[in-house]
Length: 291
Image (cartoon, rainbow, N blue to C red; front, side):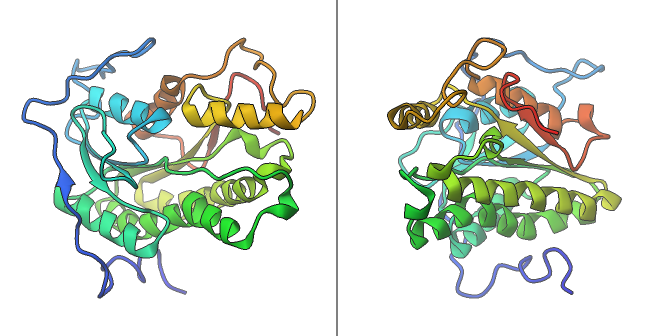
């Protein structure tokens, strides 16, 4: 059986080379601070991710942008991505256009990360999503494939390209972003749920494989979060009259904020979680208890 990355670590012939990278201005990195956001320092008084190189997929809006801001604020050098070349990353981050739904797009992104950062110490898979349907049986085959490509296989492919370098260095942290919505049955999002359940299982297995080399792999499972995508999902549920508990308020009394999720990601990629791997961390205001 092939080892992790054996089939993918070299960018295959015919893949696009590293696409154009939009780099931050010299002196960039000053960021707009949001409620609840703090500069995180370790015991020596320095920023805890100083000197580390981070790649965040889907990092120009919502949860992804908050993750990028927190990593920058903790001292990391950050490269982020979106499908559109006109997307604007948080100030201080480098940006590259990438479609992680395709094998070629993932290969080009890995090449860009190596060119821009020289390697990756922190990898956050945030890109994801799917279009809801009225019924699960009504989801067309091509949308099933798109959901699997974006929400599962993008992570599998990018990990296969970048995690072997972490393994060889015997350090690194990977976070996959899932969803708390895998818990209640949701036929309109069946393709999305299935892909995210598979992602969580894959993440635990990868954690077991990489643990002996000191590389940690965890999953964050956000609940309903105040982002444009989250609001669209809420409106869809309301339009379906989806039933008790589908649209109500979480036990902690409010929807999540992107910074709530970003702080959980920051914890999992920092040394503060140095003895944590193979876990799924729910960040959902108590709405979806597991177990």
